[in-house]
Image (cartoon, rainbow, N blue to C red; front, side):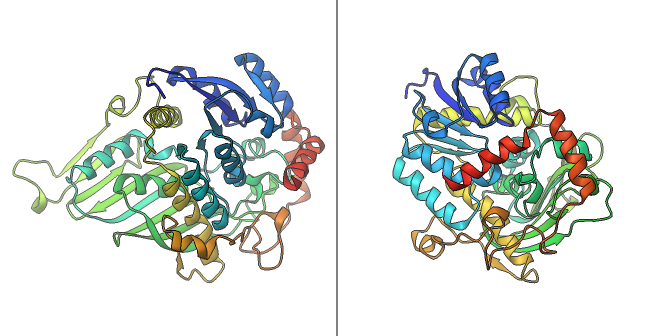
Length: 427
């Protein structure tokens, strides 16, 4: 594709996807179509942006476009990506890349067979401080990677929690605590260019005495910590979930020093620490500064989530125009995603060590091509896990009542969406 040609894209999902849809034009892409089953929201956004709208994904894929952005439900990305690839589309997929190991195998093979670009839209690696740490590490200034920490701690008030998870079966209400791990694992992988090989998963169970949880329909656990062994021998601690104390932190220990963003004050600031005996004469032992985000992102005056999304779109469009797979390719996307799957297996087995298979190797794919083990309540059968380490749990009557009030205010029609959900599962 010509470097000057606008990439025509369609976006699936008008919740999270609305941000992608609205920002496409300024980032070298032309939005031409939207798809969702929530017709009221879909039609409203489609009218505002003057683009075609679809409630049927198969018909959506027939629209004249080059690429699809998948911002649908967390556990549905792989099947939708595979369909798009088979239809000749490039794909940018939100997290997670796959929900089972079998899906991971199928997705990788679909990308390889199609020859199309696949971009894994894990945005946290593209925060300014993470980009700066990657630059310093790649220049060799910090030495060998030994130990890392990635943390994504995100508590929410009950009204907000319910508003982003409308419906009794919405994935946010039942997703196991280990699964949403890419915001914490992804930055460490990006900075150090390492891959996970083994995990031990630990879970903080749901707190039934927490006033917030009593006002939701969530049946999953509160948080998880995953210990990951990387392919260079380094150890990584991934912490994520709804613990109190909101923040996003990354810490990288190397044999020449430490890099981390600040926990106090402005957490976009970066701290570099080198011991006196490892420093050059006159070199300060410690530096604290804000990385120049404009050297990593387009100068939009935005930062955080929006800045990261800008970079993802830029790298995706560049990959399409050059025909070269991006750094966040299908192999890294699947690897990050299956860390959460394998960590849950570990947590349910007394936190014993579980392998993270290298699905770049065809010999490894054979072992997992039929591994559909998953915690989706709608697909539960013998041998499959429940979403909580406590087993099968149910939301309280108070939680159901309060959640439905919040959903109604947002325009969510529960019976209508449940019908669509049933149709999706049966198709």
